Image (cartoon, rainbow, N blue to C red; front, side):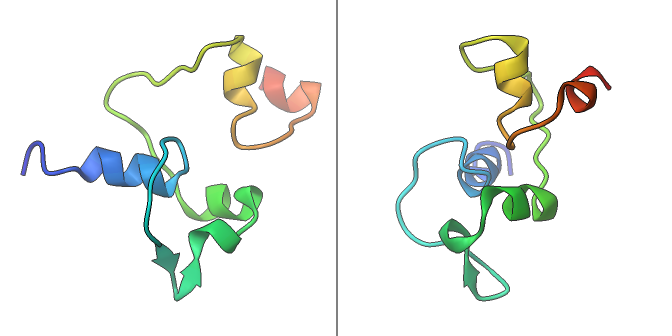
Amino acid sequence: PTGCGKSTLLRAVAQLVPASGTATLGGVPLESLDPEQLYRLVGFVPEGPLLLHGTIADNLLLPGPRTPAELAT
């Protein structure tokens, strides 16, 4: 239902908001995964835009380092 915390849960799983407790994927704690692995396994597309303070490149680099060519595509 609306307002039950689905988006908040996904933001926490994607490590976009602070959270407490433990979340696992296949029995593996998410905090033990390399962020690159996590972003390959979990996708989150919010209903509204989610931009953090900084440049566009800063926001595009949230999942991890990218080459200039990757940023341009």
